Image 1 (cartoon, each protein chain N blue to C red):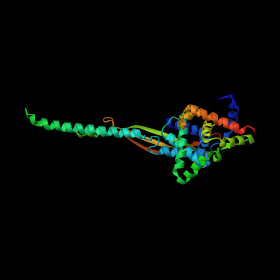
Image 2 (spheres, helix red, strand yellow):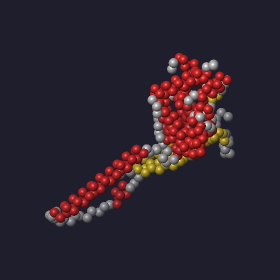
Image 3 (cartoon, rainbow over the protein chains, first blue to last red):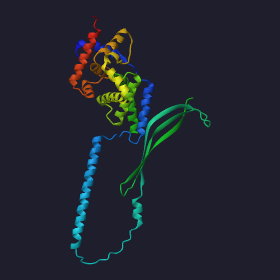
Image 4 (cartoon, helix red, strand yellow):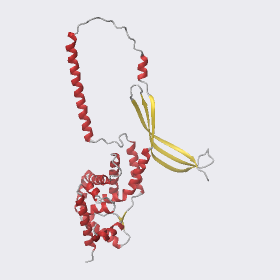
Length: 172
Length: 163
């Protein structure tokens, strides 16, 4: 900036805006925490993306319908022309239920623990402890995941979790 | 555990930017409470959309947009705020700590300059945005932002010069 304005700039910079109140900061933190716990938190779908998804879904359906029609036509036209060369009675094949059971088996694949907020609740004096303890409360979200090794399908379950920890206070 | 650090980063970022953001929002709303609501809404919206923590131009644009949303939300308030916006030189009061009379005078002078110039001054002086960032936030060119800044300083200087 030009030197003509340097003095006024300096004077302006000396003016200090009011600091944000503690209540305001904690209110925002609580809002962020609440928002984070919503299923859609952090993932806001954009309209353009949605439109593209609907478009691709529509195109996919149209392609599937076209393939289905073609396949039906082919079957209808092919059937009368095929003359049976030999009648082979296939050996009855017994499908064991075991693979089905194996296919539907899910094995634990992972546990994710995300702590969003840790609060120090200060000292407590438990009845069964000779010394004071510091109580820490952790709030977060846990996600358990199972995976089917044969199909690759996975199941995920998320839930809010709260953990309270008592830490002995030393040096008293 | 990466999310914990990220959450902490956001908190630190907010506590650092909050005074400047509230000051910025107060150009469109009268009360500090309304300005805090605007900043909170904008910040949460910005955070939820996974924008980069360093994209300050977008953050200030979000605050501006949230302020206009607040104005639109209530028709009665909209009328009041629209009137206030028209007469903004007279009524908008950025919140400052005044140490002496000269600072009080300077804050008074700041209220009297045109709102478009004051907006740029607030973003530049108290929020440390570059002209490029200001241009992005206000959807104007970088040169226009710099010109408004210069005009604002010139207007302040004229106001403060002894007659």
